[in-house]
Amino acid sequence: MTKDMTMGSPLRMILLFSVPVLLGNIFQQFYNMVDTIIVGQYLGEDALAAVGSTGCLMFLVLGFANGIAQGFGVMVSHAFGAKDFKLLKHYVALSLILTAIVSLILTIPTVAASRQFLILMKTPDNILGLADSYIKVIFAGILLTMSYNVASGILRGIGDSKTPLYFLILSSFLNIVLDLFLIVVVKLGTAGAAYATIIAQGVSALLCFIYMFRKFDILKTSREDYYLDGYGVFNMLSIGIPMALNYSITAIGTMILQGAVNIFGSSVVAAFTAASKVENLSTQTMPTLGTAIATYCGQNLGAGKYKRIYEGMRKGFFICIFISLAASAICVFGGRFIVSWFVSNPSEEIFDYAMQYLNTISFFMLPLAWIFLYRNALQGLNRGLVPMLSGVVEMVCRIIVIAVTLNPFGYWAVRLASPITWLITGILLIVTYFIWEKQSRKKHAGSQD
Image (cartoon, rainbow, N blue to C red; front, side, top):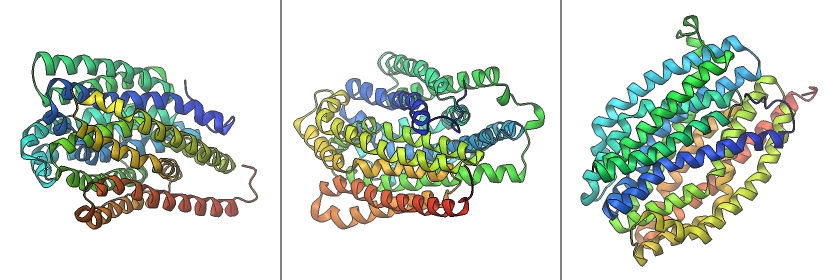
């Protein structure tokens, strides 16, 4: 069932849309978390560190692919909000064409150069081979990963946030079964975890597409919808590429942070990997809010309902306060327990390094929530330049913090790099949104909407 977010209470619509997305994000985390737990428990600390060391590299490439996919969903939401169903079908068809092209362009070079990327990141020699075995398979499955994100983005663009969740839950359990079979029974090592992930995501993508084309007449495409036109491609990529570049630029900064972590050895890498999983789990409400607000702003922009956008963003600001407090509590009070999920018989040293990081970032969860809220809102409002530049700001901030503090302060550089980055970037995005709102209020002062 589609959800028209141009009607009804803004807070209610945002929350109703967010709940399935939140559950979907949590299950999405299962792909990587289950990999990490099973790898850590059955293959040991080095294998855990190996999988963890690929996280930012994976984010660099898959973030680019999924950023483009999210951009396609924003354009679908614009057409849906404007009730232009002919254009909507063309955007769906164009999304599929561009997905195939982008996937091919990304897959070939990343599979070929995965080991060289890991070496550039100073991945420790004792985990280099294990890390390469994992990430090479992940990159080979880019088409499957991107296909799921495109399908779910299209469904969310027309207000259906529940269906992607249902198929993702199903594939999450499939991922667990495949993890155990390929790692424990077949003994494929870290590559087995990667195969489990891409197969499960492929199944989820297939189910989404089957449902999408059978259930919704407004999404059923015909041969005449499949063509490459300059205007359509420009519209799709003008939103998708800034979102993609934002992910990738942010990932470069994260890679620099991972390189700093790698210097401390595999034990610290394992601790940081486990702590990062706690961070990701505790902050899942933030990308959820971002996804909801992008669709909300996109549909209301397409419908020309600007006052609803202003009201929805005010509600979103207060939601940020609550979800940031919850995220901080999980890190501080549940961090040690959750860290133990990922490492078999973790040493006190691993607990210590992990909790140092979690205790530090817990004070800066609000600016991180601001980033997700205002960055996604601006992207949904066709203001993609500043969100993309905010990724550059994140990268530069991490570089500066690491460069200035690593030698004199050691692990403190790792603990401070993300919080300082979140604070500066969050403020930048808030200021940018309120400038847009002020200009929009002035431009549409006489409008009833």
